[in-house]
Length: 231
Image (cartoon, rainbow, N blue to C red; front, top):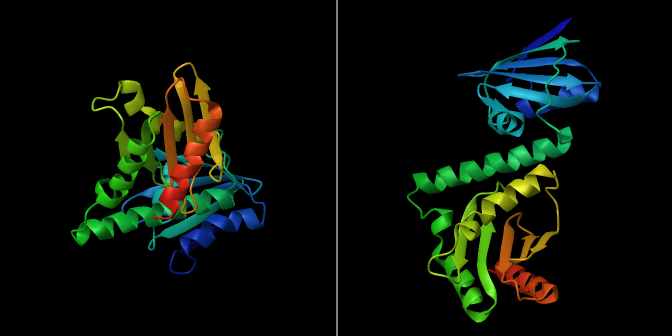
């Protein structure tokens, strides 16, 4: 038995949650203006999504923006693929936040405003912090979606490892599926890295040298977070 309708009858977010309420297993096909999305559920759990070349969260971020289209739910259709490991509610919240971030960035570009990554005020605060803390090698601010908003290094020519740090740490956080983490701390022979989840959803990252104590790195990360949250 198939269930059919349009997104004017049922909003896309409510539609995505519909199979979960009845713990249904099946395939939800949503045909949008330019593409077709397929979502697979197992006993109400959304386990796999595909939209063109996008899968999992990448596909969900695109789908939650749709306002027009038609849908069909095919009961009992299975998929062996698993591209979404986050529970449905959390995945939707994350997708909606990412959608809103992208919409805001588009509005800023349309209005001719300076993009977030070139925010001089934020860059200035990071530079002042690094200049005042001798053992800090670099600091970064990432958006909720893991995009680099600002960075300052104590070196005029930072190493390749330091430059690749934000992306690597963002991927680590995403891979362990802990979007509401408080802090992540990594310590090795090269130094200490502390990532702190700020109140506005952004992530601050502080990288200290190898001779810096764990306590000093942790306290500096707290100070950096306080500076950023007070901006």
